[in-house]
Image 1 (cartoon, rainbow, N blue to C red):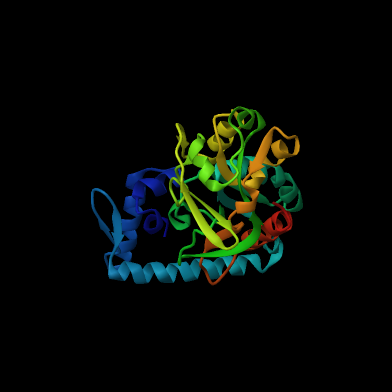
Image 2: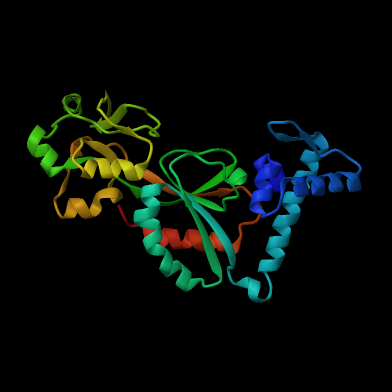
Length: 285
């Protein structure tokens, strides 16, 4: 299953701390046992035959049923095992990691493997149990459960605004140095709303970044104005080193969702972590 999901013998070998030839031999032995070709190998990727697809789908059902059976009896009734979680860099550093002790104290039999990056990842291919995503990025292969909402604000340091003045309407951004987050779906267009009217401004500036934590640091360094979920600047807004501008024009709040793979069975460790996230984030931001 992991060879299918990653599309690579070497990726599975790395996960299982073995060698690529070992994985290849195991798959070949399975094919010989079944007397059918399951995979088509090429120099670039591994793909499924029609028979391989049918076998893979049955294997999914078998492993899901096995997980469900295990979790229904004995000590396995308690959520346990490794929970692989993914989220953006800034959200992970500022909002997820500080809360993990409470979760792990409550569920001592769970171990968390947390990866953080701002790129969109395939949960199946990367072997991720659950991702925390902000915004409206959905696909048909996953289930997205709301766990909270966050305001999208426009911010700069008070020292920056002392030098440049504050924008009063979105069009004023054209006179400012705007820090562009390249992973934003709208590119260099910053979107606002005023009395149900949509306003888009094609901003510009001398710095662009592809990392949410870097965007935050650039704003705090006084390099210019940025747009960000409010949770990234809560402390700085409170102590007045950072100021929110264009509040009358804020777009609709962004959803925060727990995203996991579609399956007939939801594991206990995923279920309890989602419940924990709802507790933590449903009334914030």
